[in-house]
Length: 308
Image 1 (cartoon, rainbow, N blue to C red):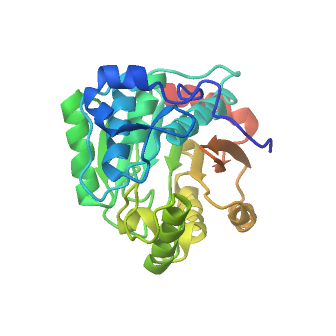
Image 2 (tube, one colour):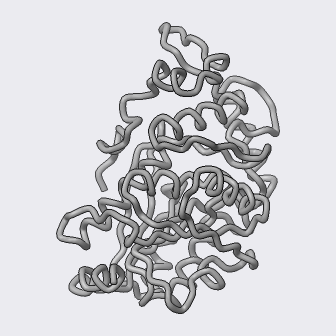
């Protein structure tokens, strides 16, 4: 794995935020801007409202989303890192398509835990024209995602997940074929761990103690019993049932130390291949794992079958 120090070269945010452009298209953002010690325009990332307004401006300026908002308390993800996941997925799919990035709505992507923000479908549809199906266990998140689709006249399929212990069951239908799935899993093991993580984050931002996340997040978005290893292991187990309906299954992995136990899980699942793709997300390195049950010589034919 090559360690990444910069965002993906196709990432529109690789050179930072163009606040002149952002404020011009979303004037409400200006009241949240400030100057850092170097004299550069920025926002206070400790301010929930500032982060939400920045996201609204980014989605409008770069991805053509005219109307975007989320209910209070829901995860408001940093856009550049989410965009990187989409671009590296495009590279992954290109590897099964004669190195040509597949584009258009015949490319089907399943976003597990799409969230109230619907960020992955918004960005992926804008950048590559893919068709997304988004699922989530939270009714409020599903309602918000539906409102974003309706307000922007977007063709995104939304399927509620009724069982916390399921990821693919109840969402992937018998006639579905997906080129890839994606997921940003809950990474804490308990509510207590999530609160501790929040305290560390606020301390790093220089704001002392708080139980309020600047990027928000409901319980289902932040933690699950056993943390992300158990969550992803369950996802791998269920993926076996849908091995013939998806080319690549993928999931973000927040902690590098979790790769080793997950590699053992994938080995036991007898996948045909798996990869670890490293990405830069702001000041840290992130990564996702990808696994497939399709042998290498089968992958291009699967893509053709899915296109049909």
